[in-house]
Length: 142
Image 1 (cartoon, one colour):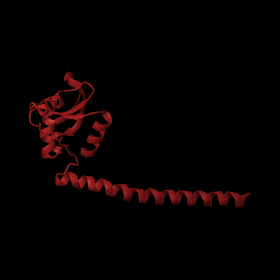
Image 2 (tube, rainbow, N blue to C red):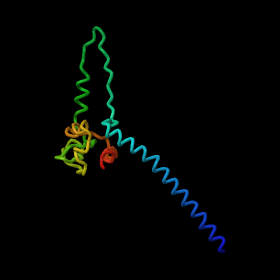
Image 3 (cartoon, rainbow, N blue to C red):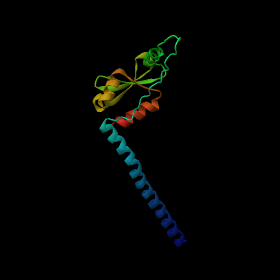
Image 4 (cartoon, helix red, strand yellow):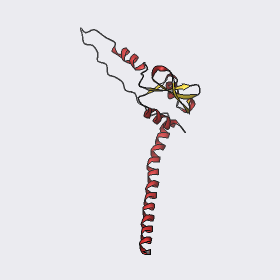
């Protein structure tokens, strides 16, 4: 009976040691990813990329229409399904849709963002979901 209890204790110790080593290794592996993200932020490369649309030139005999202006205007309108992160004084607030009503306030200061994002935050940064908003806030909060 005593030998069986000692064996259980030894096996439990080995399992705990293996889990501790795995957690230690995971900290180094995933911690390095966080360091790279912080370095990108410090360098000013936010990791946010914009896409450009290819606009076909009208052929001879066709009317020249300016669809690009319509597209840009429609992108700038506020959607009721989106969330917007916008400067509210020195801090950032999250707004839902075009109502202009604060959904919730954050403790993230506008000055904590890179200069390019500070300009965007003054106009409002659009997000499709709350998960995207929380991800953004997590990346830029200290």
